[in-house]
Length: 435
Image (cartoon, rainbow, N blue to C red):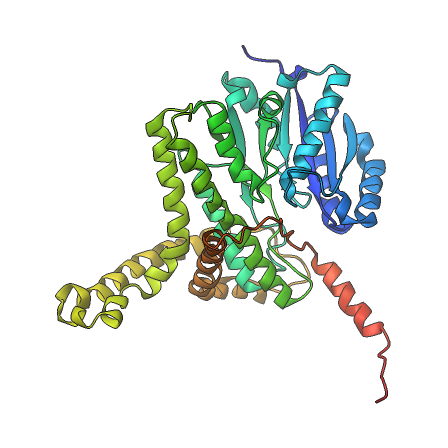
């Protein structure tokens, strides 16, 4: 059975916390600019009550300005302090999903005819995203048991962010591209889509974790008793790299974001508990293989950068007896050889990264291109201080039982907003206090 495209609808859930209209509006404009029939596109702007009055005004402004372009544009306020919810995105989009369910029932639109995409409010879909998604939904008969995963590229503001953030953002973009070519390792990440009937059956997303995207893979896998997969979509969703209103805040926000992603290691216990139980439902060996890959991925994320940088010399430094071992003396040379091989891949990555960079903004001169090249000397530093240390931080929280039960929202700003803030500070009069 292959449904008709004219019978299908796409629903877009855009969660927001307290982001400014300057951050959100470009994303909404990019949705308007997609080639998909907007009269079959339902927008659900899901904002947090705890975000304050500002985000509510922004939601109403966006609805009034852009509602005419779509089938319908709805704003849904997620109440704070609901029971059985951590402070996070999962509760927000689940609340919006349940609201959407009621709306579709009122409109007599079948759940099986609706594809739901969750997309952060600063994300910009490719102009063919919804067409591609609809096509993939139609041609796969097992469509209910699939998630549809586009490629997240952190390039929206790549020219504006500090050099360490550019290196990390580009590295994460490359990893997402590579993952799309390894379907057996692909998991839900950030913006992704699932059929509405599957979401209703699963009670939408988890409200008890701050990493609801990756966790959704495992909820879906065990719910459908192993008959579930993530389908790669070779079309990008453009996302922002981390940018705060000061350099120090940007560095801190980047670490917190990576720590949140690494907190997906909390799934190890969840998955292991089900895989080694008698009531897992899914076949054991495929489930066990996925569990090992999950465990290995989080362990290597934390350890591989440190091992490559220092592992070759550790035996000689920590064990006096190793000085008598020929193998121990050869280990630094072996590691050095591996690093030289890795350098070839790094050089290829550097030049490839320039291929998917957006055009250089007019406010930057040609010398910015040189900085975009020289920034890669920071890769060993960012790999250890950010990728590895953020993972160790997340793992330590889990080991000590100090669980992260609050979604740390990544501060979202623009270079124009930062410039305006600096100008306002310069204009504001200084107040001198007497002793």
